[in-house]
Length: 193
Picture 1 (cartoon, rainbow, N blue to C red):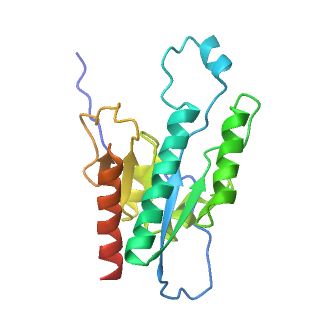
Picture 2 (cartoon, rainbow, N blue to C red; picture 1 turned 180 degrees about the vertical axis):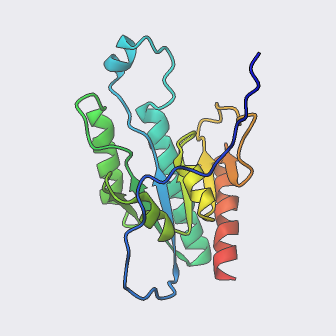
C-alpha cells in the first residue's frame, strides 16, 4: 500500500469579508444567520434515480418554521429582539421547486424578524455580523462559522440523519426543536450576561 499523509485544515476562504469603516456599536438584538440548500423539483429528483430526498420542501420549510417558532418563543419569554436572516445557497434556477420558493417568500412577509439575504452576499461578512449560525446538515457553512468563533449549529428537524462519526467538536448537532430552543437560549444568555 501507499503511505499517505492527510492534513485537516480550516475552511478554504472563498472571499474575504468586505472592509468596513463604520464603527460597530453594541447592539441589543441577537442575529441568527440561517443556511439552507436549494430544493429541487420532485420530477427532476425522480429522473436522477433518488428515492428518498432529504432536502425536500417539507423538510426545508420545517427547518425554517422551527427556527422562526423557537425565536418567537424566546423573544416573548426573554424580551430580546432576535433577527433571523436566511441566505440562499444559489440564485433561483428552473430546476428548483418554485412552490417552495413562494412558501419561503410568504414566511418572510409574515414574520418581521425573518429576512431573506441575497445568495451572492459575502458569507464572512454575514457571519461576522451574526450572533450564531444554523445550517441544514451538512452544508460547509457550519464549519466556516465555527472556524470564525461564531456558535454553529446543524439542525435536522426530522431527526433522521446520523451525527457523522468524525464530527467537528465545535459544531452542535441538534435533532429536536426543544433542544434547539435550549441551545439558542444558552447562546442568548452568553451574549447578554
